[in-house]
Image (spheres, rainbow, N blue to C red):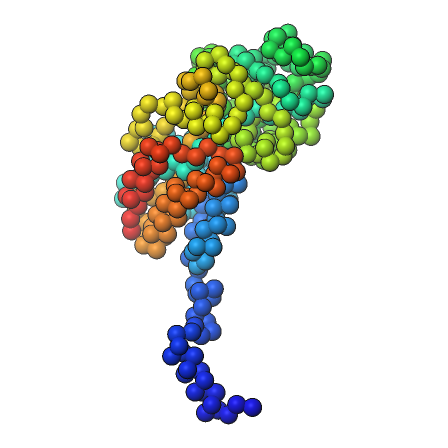
Amino acid sequence: MMGKNALAGALLTLLAAGLPSLGTTAETAETLTIAGAGATFPAPLYQRWIIDYRQIRPNLAFTYEAVGSGEGVSRFLAGTVDFGASDAALSDKDLAQVDPARGALMIPMTAGMVVLAYNIPGVHEGLTLKRDVYLDIFAGRIRTWDDPRIRASNPGLALPSKAIVPVVRRDSSGTTFAFTNHLGAIDPWWSAEGPGIGKLIDWPGTAMTARGNEGVAQRVKITDGAIGYMEYEFAERLGMPVAILENRSGLPVMPSPGAGQAALASASEIPEDLRLFVPDPEGAEAYPIVSYTWILLNEHYADPAKATALRDALTWGLDQGQRVARDLGYVPLPEPMIAKAREALARVHP
């Protein structure tokens, strides 16, 4: 057995060699926690980023609650989270509630496609919907799958005489905003006299409601005759068929990363505040329903460590994180938008 003097000497030797002692290792050092909440649309990506980034910064713990864009904006404005997330950028009314000493920034982090996933008995692929047709489905004007206007675009499909069950969001949702903003762009009736544009709207009485992108996807999957709008990743993960949609050029387009990138590239100019919507993209290859999604930040943080950590983590998201986004079915940001987002991030300070 080692004597006391020998043991003391051994400990001194270890310390002299620069080895960490108990209580001072990276794993046990104090952890900085940064809390966020908001959109369900990018939630799978943000949760993956949190896992990946923890490998780089083990003493930095991000948390993210997927509570919907509306609630994310509310918590950000109330200052109960360190960052918010929304698929609908802050409105002028929202910005007016922000203390000028605190400031607010909207940083686009990724983009995605809103798809129409369906559950039609006997139809597992190939459903094509024209613009006026899917608008009228969600307006409650087309009620059965064998409607002549649906059959006209799908001569090879055995469409059943079955009721259409639209599935929509019951919570305040940026995905709803992106979808209804698109419907309003393709037909002025939708915004002027129809259900309207917003994160939470009054859908026709035939619609079934669910909470979150995940909830809509699950409800469509178990409901015969259902069709619902959701972010592409959710439908892809559950192996659900999605409709081929007619775009502004009158061409049918399947959702794909390339079609999403073509849609984003159709925007000619990026505004200084980075509030860029592409409600009805031009281009023969463009998928028709795309949306950026934003992280909401303070310009000024009382805690310098949080300001630095957020700036560093989101810079990583704009770089290495974009490859992860592509792998998960999101649309990576165009390079001009990445450059603008980096400039905006540089304004985050203690």
